[in-house]
Image 1 (tube, rainbow, N blue to C red):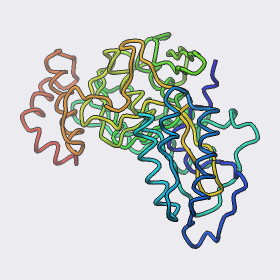
Image 2: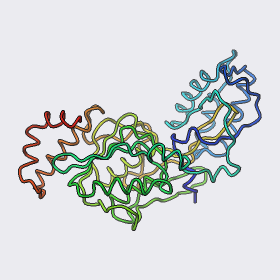
Image 3: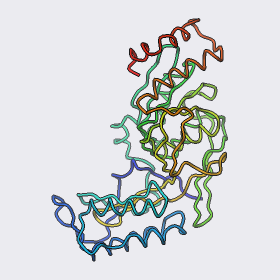
Image 4: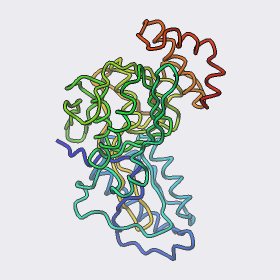
Length: 353
């Protein structure tokens, strides 16, 4: 069984890496790699992918594509070229080689025990990904979450945000800027919107036929929102764990997705250092839905209502009002929602939607 703490996301790009003994120049100037140095870097990538990549069948073609050039290349140019090749050959939107102008700090001695998110002080600076908590006329709640932060650091913050909106008659959860994070936070959030022990997308490794199942949990801090109508906002920037939450809630029939198709990265993993100035994303597993038997890799989460990302919040607000009217949901202010629908453009403008 895999350790779920290994499955960090792109948010961890700045975390610990481990140098492998290649010479590094002054960080003030871009690194220049001669053909021999490119070949050495390719070899380190080979070692890392063969050791950790979740599907060994895809690795040979990817490695074959990483051929040294006959000329010197700058670090940023090489990272861009090889990222494009890795993504194409591995069919993996997460795959990337990242250049750092500064020396990278060492990896933890036990790489498999790397934390599933940034340190607590970093998450406090980011407010645990919680960017907005708002309440709209018609008793519609709105929550914008820009990162899936580790629950061990941020559960209390997310629980407080959900509690503020717990009396709403519908909730809009904005994931348009959510680039991912901890799969454990996906599980934590999903547990507030689905019954306990509901199966979520599992983490599967073809190389050793392992399967780490995920399911919702009972007794977590925060309100039970399993009956609240839910609308998820996505964009092309929604990625990784942000997509995981949207996909699982959509496929469970629990939420309507409004916006653009998401970025299409379904392979959780982590960064590994392959050079003092380069880190490589290594996908450790692929997500598999208990509903579809597949995932959102390459195609993204497909919206139920497709609109341009900047329009998604306004459209979801109108949809929530309309659905509540059609459902004849009780209201402390009879006729309010019908009136809001009749003046939706004006109301949306006033609210800044």
